[in-house]
Length: 496
Image (cartoon, rainbow, N blue to C red):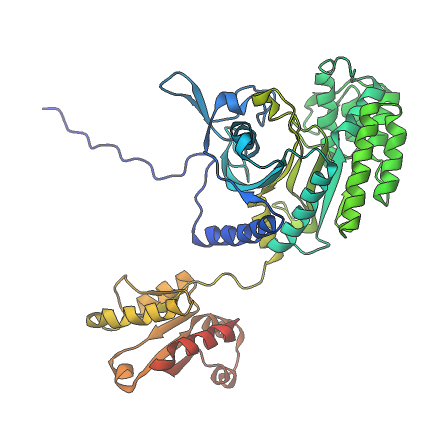
């Protein structure tokens, strides 16, 4: 008789490249997003929720990895043989929505969206296949005033989330100016814009690595190529020294004021009509931001490139300027947490008509990580007030106590796990509860409750050295049952 084999149990592990979010992380994210979307709402933007699934045709060629067409996404063939995919960002769905519903939408259409996106890319440290984005876009407005508004709104959103003024800068450039420089060096022919596209891509990627490689490394990539420390060789754009000088002059064109930077850019683009148009747009954006009082937080920076190919005009990035210690113990700036730009050709894929659009996307997980750095050492979000269960036949009374606290706006729960007082207080510690409420038969007979200040108790154990100090700040006190809510609020306020 054949031996029966036990069914194989599935392995309890998160799929590679994905992660789970627990209570405090979810609460932290929701709090941050409420602050950001309140700013978007104040600017007149409306919320939009789109499907997490789009047709692969709707996503088109604008994928995260331009070298792998129709890859970089999680896709499958439906029953009708059409291909569908999980959205890889929130902008491509917006283009589809606007094209589908434009007759019923106002023009310009201003929307914000929050949600997860999925990318079928190789995961790595801090790089996941699912992550959250928070976007705001204006579709149907060709004026650079729309780009300036997005930058101003981004600044206000960062400050609302908890990033202090002076700890960030919004860097602004224009793809038209860069195209004008490409025209000057001979990599772009306005009559045949597709010619030289590969070489322009190499130049863009080289400029984007300025912070990491420095001017010497970028110049090498503009020329024949660069060999890194490991010996790997990256082929360059093949520009001559004079051509590379022009590109490097563009990268280093930043000056003290936006007007001075734009004046230098005018010199570099020469007679290029596209380049001059880009400079004029930057001049308007700089003037509008100055009029709104944002000059100290937003500046024209020609080194900003942005990787995605669908940008057609102004591009911008929000960079955090404070320093952190990385995993190898080195001090460095935190870096970018948001980016965006103008994409006037995206909706045209559906309609055949050029439709202006501009927007920004905040990397939710990146910004949350930055806020943790800012708040390091400060109090964390508190768990619920815990109503302990001393006598199981009085559950209704303990539940009424819990409901009373909740009705007063306090976060509270009754212990449901079963066990002695030590187990209940251990649970309260694990939950981060600020206060535990204890009412046994003796307290009930006297009309009082015991309040245990768990947050203060933890601090006392770590900080107080003498018995006199302990008595001056008791971690447990008695309060009238009728004054329960007021006593709990006072104890929480004392801890804060």
